[in-house]
Picture 1 (cartoon, rainbow, N blue to C red):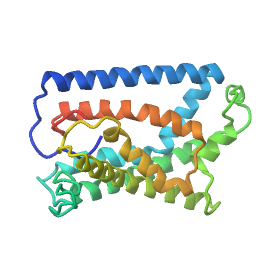
Picture 2 (picture 1 turned 90 degrees about the vertical axis):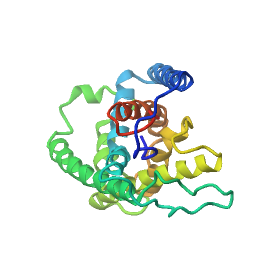
Picture 3 (picture 1 turned 90 degrees about the horizontal axis):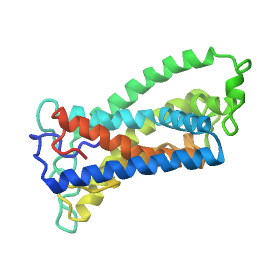
Picture 4 (picture 1 turned 60 degrees about the vertical axis):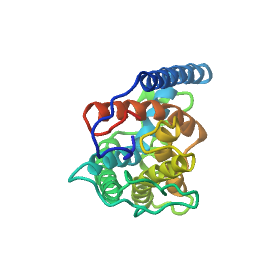
Length: 255
């Protein structure tokens, strides 16, 4: 879900656009089903669910910040464009008028604030659960209870092993990285001559999460299988979220 095309009336979709949205959704559903099947062939369904759950929880600041951009971007009328109306060397806008400081800053604030509260509550709940005496967890072939703490509560860091610094640095960088990713996607779309609100599959759905993760990588180096599962699921989650925002009148297009 991006801030793109959030400040005007909903755009009626023609048959081609409706067909594209349906094809994209069905394609992503099939790909995710295949991912689940392959994961369960090599590991177990429990492993997949834990990887999915921990990965999404770990990256929740980026998802919240991304959603926050859409909703803050439409409050109080149009905001000031980040690019100030300037064009790139190709003659097209740097980002477009849909990318505003209000949406960018609002997304960061919402993403970071809600995530800090979420982390505080999660820490209080999960730390109180003993490591031993949970046979269901011990049956997992790939994910151990120790890894749950490593990934979600005390993420390994390439800079510091202080868990408090790791968690708050990760949360802040993910909340900042999501709007940066949205800007990156918009910049790429402009370079391809795509108008504001035009369909650009995968770039529209993956830009925010990939750039957010790159920003936080040194404080949050996840195993490759976490990144794979998240990258496959995120486009489906993003487009479904965009459809909901479109139906609520928060976006002019459902992508």
